[in-house]
Length: 579
Image 1: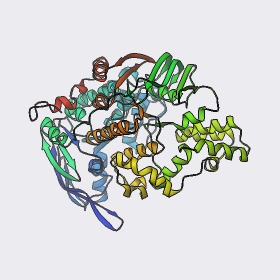
Image 2: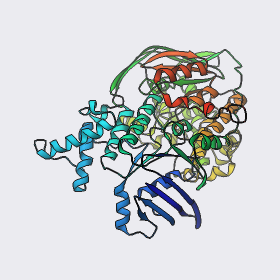
Image 3: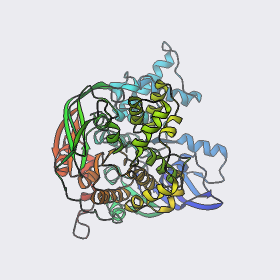
Image 4: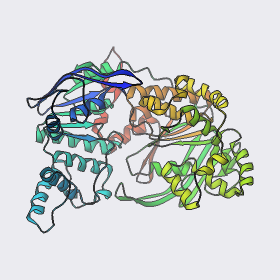
């Protein structure tokens, strides 16, 4: 049993004491799952690190199996807490490039000797560890893939191997911090069912943090709502979740479509390659897709189906094996798959925001907006061409460099290395806007996204999770793109913040006429944000049309039972109406 009494945690920030946790108390019985929900920055991850014994705290008591840990506990007692607990982190994929079986064997070996290794394959110890590892793989439903190499496993299977490694520690407390949050519904279902199975077989107390109400409702026996470091409520899951969700603002109406004019179209698109993360070959062919001017188009589907590949082709940063991508540039169709002088102007009017987006930790938001405007401002292409002539850079090379501005940092570094160029070439071709001009462009975007102008002079470390997402949107929107492609950037923000972001995006769509293509695993979000939804599976379009119909069909076909606990069902009957 876990008993937590009066936990206090303070940080010193700019010579001020900030209380991150303020008297947090709860109990978790053996064989019980306690779900913890709350908004970003509420203290959930801090609490998990304290329970794991890797974060000091300032007050209170942790009682695990009648052994008490306090702020004054010895180093040995803290080491015991670390040994007695296991933690599974959402973004952790730290597996050895070996089989699933050997990954678990290494964890068992570390239990004996303090470091991860494998004994000789012909030794009795190897056989003994293999038999023990099989038990844990069976517990997470992966015994049939024990000899599969880790890098060919799907995302959900990797998550389950990681969970098996944690269970191999034989812990007395299992901590799950946002398990499988960034994964597709099918993968989430696999992981959540594995957690329930682990609870039944081990009967150890489990603490699970998630900002997804449907996950909390599906697996939790009791729920604790943590807000600004304090326990706002705890008790029966639906009661606590309803109280938490009551603070969600109402959904803004979806702006009506104002035009049937096609803005972007992809015809006969094909792409084939092996996806090591999914352990399979993506064979996308004969894809036809379009987005109308002013439309919000949603894309759903399980991992490995080709969503990100399609988004990159539509953004012009990945060449298809066959087919065409065309953009309506003031009434003229411009092909994105082949070079033309007009292609840079098309790219200036496009933006893409990836799942792994990152704001610069060293520059203020104003500095980053000034750079963005230097790259995609109204006269950026015209001015860059003049500078390119002075630098002896031809138009085709300039075009190739310009596409890098929409790629992810690792890809940019690799491409520059192949070209034999240094990153400084960008600052020479695309100098930043003056700060005063950048602030003028930023103000209406910040207002539309509900962001304070005060944070323009802040770096990302001073922003909450929700503010970071909106700040990145502001960076993209500062240049007023005609089309913005969003590839699952909202995966790890809480539902209240997500509703706020959805409302702000509708406002941008209504006021600026911006078209959006959005990939997301959040079905509630997709139903309320999109004019139309396309379901992509195994490189094919399975269905498209009304968001609710397509999303509900996708949920049924993916077997994601946890999604039955959507926000509408959780709130059913509250004040005589649904959410």
